[in-house]
Length: 190
Image (cartoon, rainbow, N blue to C red; front, top):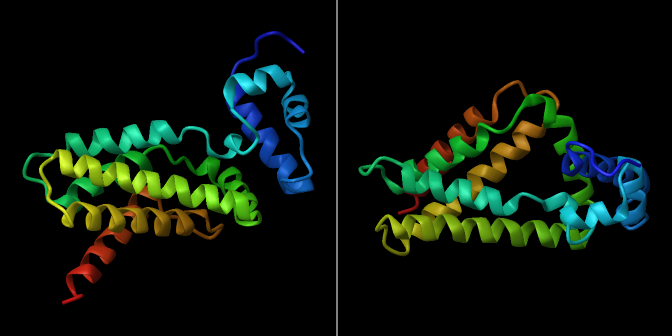
C-alpha cells in the first residue's frame, strides 16, 4: 500500500458500501474496509472516527452549505424561499452518476437500526441548523421551525424519489416540487 493516494475518503466510502451490501454492516471491520480501498487502517481513522461515520461523513459541510444558502437568500425572501435556496444549493451536488452508490448506501442504512437512528439524528441536526439560520434572518418562532421541518420533509421526499432507478428528474427539480407541494399543504391546514 502506498503512503498517499488521492481520493482516500471517496475510496473508503465506496469500499465500505460495497462490503456492507455484500456482507452486512455488522460483518465488516474497519481493517477490511481499508484493505478493500487499498489503504491502511490508520488512514481510515484519519478520515473517519468509526465505521459508522464512513456512511455519514460530510454532514458538517452540508449544515454549512444550508446555513450559508439560507443566509445568502435575498433579503425579501420568505422563509420557504430561503429554504428553497438551501435545497437548490444542496441539490446542485447531486450527479446522476452517484445515484447507484447513494441508493446502496441508503439500503445499508435502512437495514440497520443503529444506522437508521444515526440518520434520524443527523436529519434532526440539519433541521435545527435550518431553523437557526432562519432565526438569524429574523424569522420568528414557530415559523422558523415549521419552515425548517417542511424543508427537511421536502429534502427527504426528493431524495427518496431521486434514488428510484426509473427517475429521470434532477434532484433540484424534485426538491423544488416537494417544497412547493408541502408548502401548499401547510397553507391548507387551517
